Image (tube, rainbow, N blue to C red; front, side, top):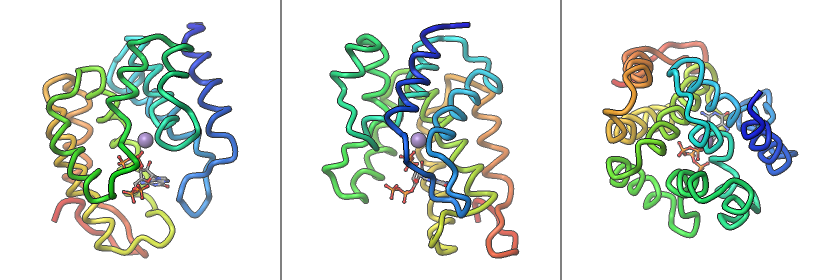
Amino acid sequence: MDTHLLQATHFAAIKHAGQRRKDPQQTPYINHPIAVAHVLWKEAGVQDVPTLQAALLHDTVEDTDTSFEEIGSEFGPLVRQIVFECTDDKSLPKEERKRLQIVNAPHKSNQAKLVKMADKIHNLRDLQKTPPEGWTLPRVQTYFAWARQVTDGCRGVNPQLEAILEGIYAGEFEYEGMKYRCIA
Ligand SMILES: Nc1nc2c(ncn2[C@@H]2O[C@H](COP(=O)(O)OP(=O)(O)O)[C@@H](OP(=O)(O)OP(=O)(O)O)[C@H]2O)c(=O)[nH]1
Ligand SMILES: [Mn+2]
């Protein structure tokens, strides 16, 4: 048992307590960071502990009251740096944040690229099954096309994750009982 991973899981669980995903079942939010770390370990063979810790923590600053200072003092400068690279600047308008994810992806560290790809894999798999409440068909299609631009910028660090993403983009998603291609 790696105590560093347990520490990050515990920290994220407390920070995301009470938060829910946007799916109709309102899945507890903590399922998402745990799934992202699980994709890295189980499906991509990632064993680097700081990367797995950053996966568990990747939405704490963006979506809770957590500061980068707190991450640094609990988990050290490397984990703080990876989480920083995976955190959008919420003071910017949404369109600008989306554009920056595409532009910045190729310049991120290998560890941040791994977390970004696994994050998108989990969100896209969720999206393939059931879209978040209120998402229109064009919104779902736009998300697939945008995610592909982001993950294309993360290539070259893990063939397994790239293969999973290729499979998703080549596949279909379900929307109100109909099937559509993920990338038109
Ligand atoms: N597919 C899916 N996504 C959900 C669900 N619940 C919450 N999300 C989150 O919604 C975000 C995508 O929705 P958007 O409309 O693009 O972003 P927004 O949250 O800023 O409005 C993702 O955030 P993110 O992790 O910051 O990733 P990203 O926006 O950088 O991709 C994802 O984690 C769900 O049930 N299904
Ligand atoms: Mn996420």
